[in-house]
Each structure stands twice: as C-alpha cells, then as structure tokens.
Length: 472
Image (cartoon, rainbow, N blue to C red; front, side, top):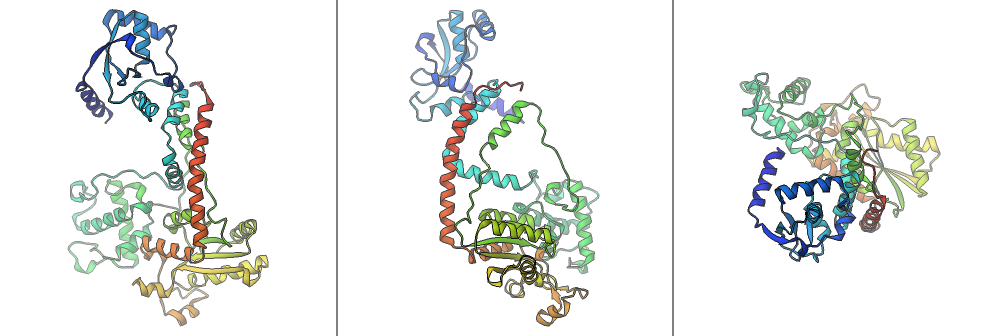
C-alpha cells in the first residue's frame, strides 16, 4: 500500500513550479541543526554527492521559504557549494521563515530522509503539542488497558464473504451476530454471554427454514451461538479479536527489531503514564467490585474515568481480595469506605453486597458507620424499569434460594443481559451519587493543567537527551 501513496505524492510535486535560484541567495536554517545532524564538507557522503553534482547537476530541487531559507535540502546545498555550482533548482513554499510554526514545518518537509536515532528523538520533541497533551495522556490510558483490535473490512457484506462451512440456513443468525458485534465494538473483546444476551433483544432464527427455531435463552441456542462464532471467525466473518476467552490467558513478550524501533515506541510513552488521583479531595474512599470477569471490558473504562479502584471478585471476594481493599482504604486516610457492587440478580448475587460488608466488618473490625455497600446493578427494580427479562430459573441449590424466591420469585437474570451502555450508565450514576461532584470536577481541571506542565518538561527532557548511538 505505501507505493501508490508515494507515487501520488510525487505526482503532486511535479505540478509545483520549480525555479532556479543562485546558491548565494539561499540561507541554511540554523534551527535545522537542532533536529538534524549539521552537514559538513568533510563528510564523505557530502563529498560523494558533490562529485555526482559536478557530473550530473542537482537532480532534486531544494524546498525553500519565500525569503530563501532552506526547509529541505541542507545536504544538497552543502554539496552544491562544495562542487562550485552557482544555481540550484528550488520549490518555493508559500510561507516565510518567520512563520510561528516554522520548526514543525521544517520537520514535515524532511519526512522521507534517512535519520539516526537521535534525529528521530529530536523530531518527536518537535511534533509534541501542549494543546494535545491531555488528550494524549487519556489516550495512552485507553491503549494501555485494552487489546489492539484488528480492522474487519466490509463486515456487513455477509453474503459476499460467506464460506461453505457457514450454511445459508444460518445466515439470519449470522447477520444478527455480526450486527451485535459491530454495535458493541467499543467493548471488544466481547464475551460469549454478552453476545448471547444481546441476541435476545431481537431473537433471530437459528435455522432460516424453521419458524420454531427462534433464538432463546436456553442451552441449545447458546451452543449454536458458540459453534457459529467459531466458524465465523475461522472464515473471516468476525474478527478473532472481537471475542474474548478469559479462561485461557496468553503471554507474549515485547521484542523489537532494533534500537531505533524501541526508541520510537519508548519516546511516545515517555512521561505519558501520569494519573492524577481524581478522588483525593473526596470525603470517602470509593471502590468498585464486579462479580465476574466478563464485566471487565464494560466497567473498566468507567472506573478509569473516575480513577476508582476496580476489583473483580468472581463471586464472593476472597480474603486476600478483601484485605487489599481494606489496605487501600486505610492508606487513603479517609474515614469511610464505600463499596459499589455489580452482581447478578439471582440468589447469590443479591446477597453479595451484604456479605461483602459483613465480612469486611468481621475480618478487620470496621465499625458499621464506617463502611457502606451500594448496589449499582442488578436489582429487581432495574429489571422491571428497563424490561430486562428474568426468565432464568434461580438455582435451587443456593443457600440463599428460599430468601430470594420469597422476595423476588424464581426468575433470575445475569448481568450480561443488561445492554453494556446501560450498565455503564447505571455504574456512572451510582458512583456520582456518592461523590462530591464539585471536588471531582476541580480535580479534573487540575489534571488538564498537570498534563500541559508535564508535556513542557517532557520536551525539555527529550531535548536534553542529546545524540544517541543508533547501534546501542
């Protein structure tokens, strides 16, 4: 793909007027030396270029400003003077050397040149912008917490990309699955359960010619979905990265082809991992506890936005998990601990808040007035308010079964049945209900100022690094 783009760039260059200017009328840009290695007549490469110019002339025009300052072509200029050439071809750019963004423009005109690692470092310093400092800081957090997602072109054109192993009878269900995956792209990787419950909003036919095969909240439908997603990913209809398998973790290692690649990557991350404690001015210490791993892609972005610690308890929190929550609270120096919990609407999930608070009090001698449990989701009232189906039979084997049935009946519901955006909204509303919002917004404002200050010192630090051996 790069070649057509480069060809198009050259075609644009040919349309620009090239004129001859006396070498004596051109001025090297001193600021060029702050980014790139200054050209020298003693450089063997400059001497070889000068010999070529004596024989063939200057073949590539220099880029200069309206007042004759060189943007691109300092090495050619040096070689031309060494070769005793009186005039050189130039392309005059539509701005002068007094332009307020001159250094950045100079770097843009030197994109294609071969560079040392130190020159790459200097370019990155120039490209950084205080106006974008906070946005870059936040973007780094997003990239840090999520997997890279591969692009999937033309996913809506299912019929064109269909393979023999995905039969025509499965097409309605496949289309519905792809629609769900696309709609929830911001939450990738998705769990199988999340896709399952979202299909229940508009159940497709599991078999195109069988009206009675409508997708349902049962084991057979779930099994069909699992098989269909496997085939769809194998044949390129759904990206592999769209679906998660948290039960089979994979480890890879950060390796680099050379020091230059490493430096480019590290330079982009240098002094970008700053997090201001947005809750430091709050009167209480706040923690979020989720019941299961499948919630992580949905609730993690919300917790990041508030810098609220997030724990996935995988059911009831273990003692080490509870100890870690207790230690963070005590370390905060705040008087009260507030636990925001997300759990299923079922016999065990309904008791998680009370159980967690009770264990924390018993294990660490916390007085009742100094700990509060708040349930963000999923409650019976929320199921009724948002028409979330409670068509899953509550587990009769649970020790909390009788109490749950007496209060809510036998119908239960998992968190995955809640639309991800709704679940995020419920969590945000619950967090903000226990926050001092004015203090929180003041911390957000200070973080933006912090980001600009850090970016300023980042530039100074990178500029002070100086030349680096590219072979290091």
